[in-house]
Length: 148
Image (cartoon, rainbow, N blue to C red; front, side, top):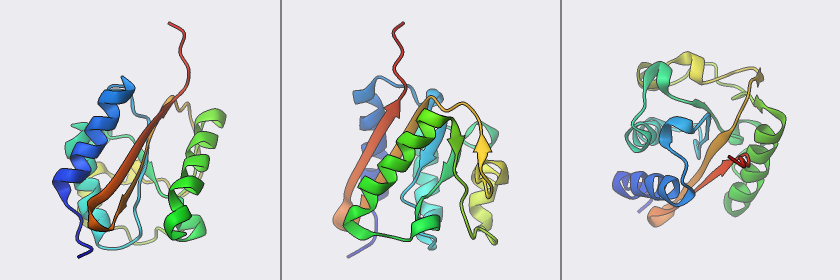
């Protein structure tokens, strides 16, 4: 079965937050698994539950797959590099070809959080996730070093 298990996804994200010591309200960008399928709606719903944020309070969301496609087992590695580059250089890469977003996603997090052009803004913490077959999930919380 390839059906994702929402409980496992939510637990994965929340455990990553707990292990990192980063609070959900500090996440500036979600670098999602998001494969441009109807499953994206469920993924966004899971992120909303895991972070306890929605609407204008939700972080910006992107997926590198919109630029390079789904590179299967290499996706997590490549997307993590992209997440680190966005963090280092303070920008959010666009979701290319996002011409007709799923309306329910827009209802949950709003269109402003799904950039279709590059956004220059300070990024201090990124949640990068990959969700796989059989509920094999991973989530990294990547943040800038703060010596305070």
